[in-house]
Amino acid sequence: MSLDHLDRLAAAQSAFADLLAAADPEAPVVSCDPWRVADLALHLGGVHWWASAMSLGVDLDPHEPPGPRDTPTLLAFYTWSAAHLRETLAARPTDAPALTLDGPGTAGFWRRRQLHETLVHLADLALATGTDLRAIDDRYGLTASDWTDTVAELLDTMTPRQVRLGRIEPPADTAELVTEDADVLRLGDGEPVVRVVGPARSLALLLWHRTGPDDASLAVSGDRAALDRLLALRLTP
Image (cartoon, rainbow, N blue to C red; front, side, top):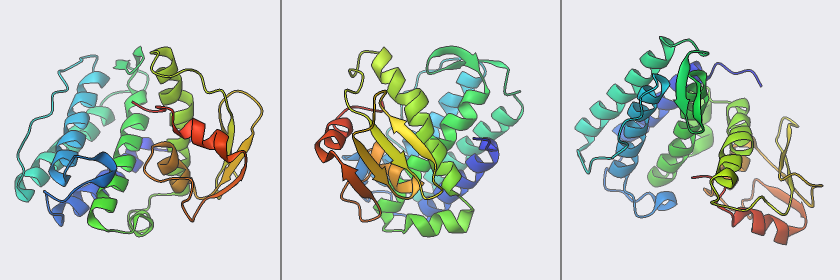
């Protein structure tokens, strides 16, 4: 899948900042309980800053501060951190040496990783503010391809890393995931015993535990118990 991850990252960051500007900083983020909106913004801004350094081969302390918690300062912090990340990545060749989640790698890793980090937390913020995520996608030009790549990254990077670190056992079941654009992806290495069809956005949020298999936009066929077992795994950090 060929995406301009840096361009897509800018769109997702703009959407997050605009939602943040109108949000109550102490509104609960139910998908990241017990976080509040302020905690979500501090986390994502901090991750952007940390990822900028990782792309340069520097692993900073990822400690997240408890504040600020007022909207104007939070927004200033987030937009500054988001711009810093984009500028750092834009100035760094994608094949330049960097640190990644799996040790030495290339700077291009962070273009993809930070796009998906932002998309998932954009979904968290949309839920916290009662905003229709589909409308956000339409407004900011976020596409099914962006969300399909979010699913793909979880399957080719995040879950294998969880297995390597001993956080989960290799999935014993296999699910086939089919997007609205007829992209077919597979969670697990065996023959699929369950099939989930739906928008790539919904499939990504399912795997990131932001929605469930009863989501009206998803159609599940086959062994539902196998899907439940897969979703019970810690597929992501």
